[in-house]
Image (tube, rainbow, N blue to C red; front, side):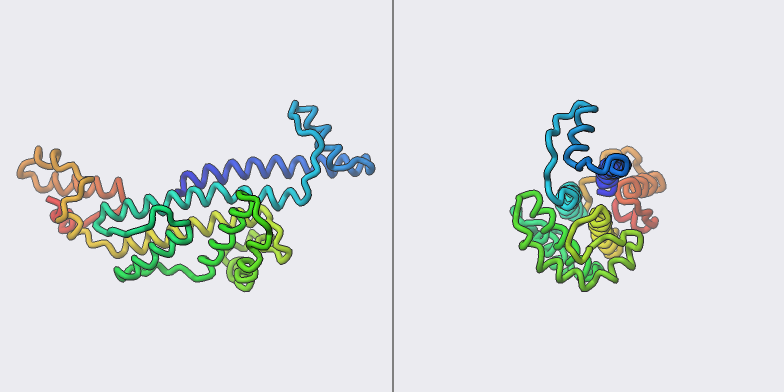
Length: 261
C-alpha cells in the first residue's frame, strides 16, 4: 500500500507542480495585461501546446480537482483491506467481511472482529471520522452528488481540526471552514489512510502467536525444501527465520522457528 500510494502521490504532486506553475504564469500575464481573463489565458496556452481545451469555464475547479485526487488512495486502501483479510487467514486469523461491503463497512467489520479476538488497534475516533469525511468527498466528485452529502460529515470532523493539524502541522489549508478542498486535504487524507493501515498491521503483529502458527504448518513454508535438510536442525531454523523475515519483516526466536519443523 505504501509503495502504490507513494507512486500515486508523486503523480498528483507532479500535477500540482504543473497547476501552480500555470497559475504563476497567469498571474504574470494578468499583471502585464489586466484585461485578459482566465478562460482566455487557458485557451491561449492550450493552443500553444496542442491541447484542444476550448474555453475553460468550470467554476470552483480547484475544489473538484483536489476532490478527484481522493479517488486513487481510497481505491488502494480498499485493496489493502482485502489483502489484509487474506493475509490474516494465512496466519490463522479468519475474518468474515461481506463481499459487497463498502469501505467503511469493511473497516468496521474488521475492527469489530479483531476486538472480539482481543486485538484492539489504537485508532482515535477522529481518524475514523476523517476517513469517512474524505470518503464522502471522494464519492461526491466520483458520482456527481450534491454538496449536501458531505456537510454533516464535515461539521463532525471540523471539531477535531486542531487535533488533526497538530499531527499534520504543514497542511494548514486542510479542512478549511468554507469546506473548499485544497491540496493539503489530499495530503492529510492519504496520510490518514496510511496511518490507519499501519495501526491495524502493527497491532495484529504484536498479537501473533508464532509457535501456534508454526504448528499449523502454514502453506507459505516450503516443507519440501525443509525435508532435503534431513537432520540439520540449524539449517532448518535458518530457513524458517529467513522465510518469515522476507515475508513479514519479523525475526523469530529459535524456539518459534522450531515450531514450524
